[in-house]
Length: 63
Image 1 (cartoon, rainbow, N blue to C red):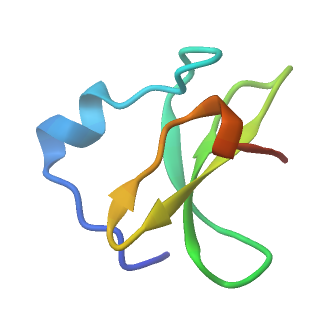
Image 2: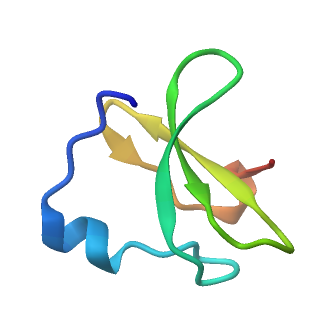
């Protein structure tokens, strides 16, 4: 879905720092890659900057 390339083991351990839900590839409103939380009650999107996921609550946006 986007250009985010993460090793399989990294993908397996990445979690939303707020809800601890798994993260999946997504695309933001600006067309840039994001990681989307799969939490059904509080889904959040985290930006990917220069190929690096920024998993800071202050940088997340609600989905």
